[in-house]
Length: 375
Image: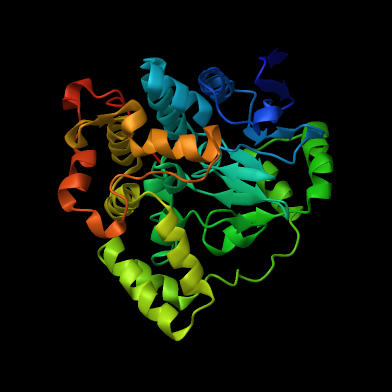
């Protein structure tokens, strides 16, 4: 029996639960109804004894595949922040709860991460049994560009990338193309995009007895893996292990003096374009997340995102926050000229950063108090 909603299509065929994100005009950016439907569907498949595994894909304007999920619906974030819409609080609470369900899912969960996979799309596809990418995959956690931090568990999964690659990806929002994500531990296998339809149909047509058999078969469809990306170099650890963003830009500046073009110059330019405040907040998030369990890390992120839209310690709310300003500049007005406060990395102080990590709720009333780690 199939279950259909406007933005999420799900069906059970044989022993597999199939999910298609169906908001192609928005690159499957997650709305609150989508988060709720995905939560409902995943919980249903999990308790269904006939379902051995779950597979999720996106859709694009021309049909299936080609776009997985571009993240959360940031236009909605902006409108809700400016209007004081209380559903914004519900969105983040319910999205992070969904992320926890996915990370702790008790059945094999397979994500076909074709096309755009950013922000919320990463939250739907990390911490699972099998993460599959194609040559068309464009993966990133670009939140610092809009005055936000890499949420949806980013502090957990990015901090577990090799060395200090997590700090680099979190702060710069570096785009991972194709199978580059395998080199940093954010994907497991790569397959030719032309083979996706046959894989999807094959999963539906075969008879399955065990979830592990499904995983094995999908892995067998994988193609060869290209070499590591050119930007993945020893300088990443050298620079991004430094204690502060200010020290990082100083180190990059020294490197640029010796080599005016190349990785250091590109990285320094990227950092100078991001929100200085949220760069420092994101760095602290990754450093804390490295030693935290998933549930505690998601609770921390829920605290952080509340402060992003209600930065009371900085006397800023709504349109006055870096988050609202970043979305305005990148998505609403598209002038790409955000007016960050403070304007430079050098102006950031610990007093501006640390309150982001203070919970606005008592422990017993935290909106994610029910989350428990189970692996």
